[in-house]
Image (cartoon, rainbow, N blue to C red):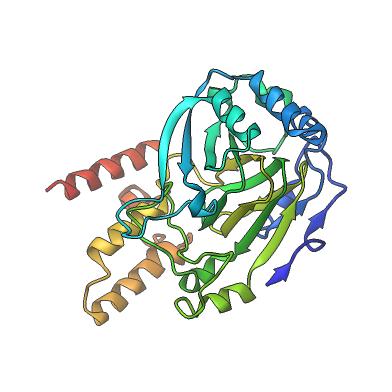
Length: 332
C-alpha cells in the first residue's frame, strides 16, 4: 500500500477555484487546505457543538434519510449474513435529531449519505462556495460518526472536501476490480457495487487476491479543510475517524447528460453476451472493440453521413430515439 500523505499533495492551490489540471489529471490528488476558509470548517475547528449549531441554521427541521446500524457492526454498513438484505435500517427524520444523537455520542452507527445541499439545506452552499470550473456539479453532504464505507466506485469525477473530523480514504485503480471481490451488482447498499473485503480486517485466506490490490492502493488521511480529487471509476473506501465526521462532495461528469450510466450496458451484456459460447464471445469482443472502445472518426467514414444512424455522433434527440428503440426491443 502506498501512503500518500505527501505525494500528489497540493497545498498552495487557490481556495477560489480548482485548476483544470487537477480535474483532468486522471489520478487521485490531495488538496491540502482547499476549503479551510469555509465557515463550515471554521465552526468544526472550534468544536463539534459549534459545527452542529452552524448546520442547524440551514435546516434543523429538514427531513433527511438516515442509516442506523447496531453498535455490533463496528460502523461498517454492509450486507446481512444471508446476503438478502443489509445490516442497517433506513429511517427518515429531522436533521436536527441526527445532530442531537451525534452530539450525545449515540452508540449506534449513524450515517447521512449523499444529501443534496441546494434541496435540503438552502444557503449552505452559497456560504461555503467552491468554483470547480464545471457546469452544474451535484453538491452533497455526508455526515455520521465512526462509520466505514466499503470500497466502491462512482461514475462522476469527485472532489471530496472534509469539513469535520478526520477521514481516511483508500483508493484502488479501476483495473484492480478482479482483486477487490466485488459483491452483487443488483443488490447493493446504495446503488453501486461494493467490495466484500473488510478493509480494517482483511481475511486474506478468503480473499487472497486482495493482497495484490493493496499493493496498488493509495491511502490519504484528510483533516478538516482538506479535499481529495477522486477520478471517475476509481474504487474508494472511506473510514471516519472521529465521533462526528462530515464531508461535502462535488460530483460532475465529463460526458453529455443524455448518456446513460455504463452500468446499464454491463447489465445488458450479462443478459445477452456473458453466456454465449467462447468463440461467439470473442467475435463480439471484436465488434465492441471496433464500434465502442476503439471507435474514432474512421469507424463509419465509409458510410454516407445521412445513412450512419446510431454510428453518427449522438445528441439529445438521437439518444432519446435510441433509448426508445432499445426499450421496444426489450419489451418484446
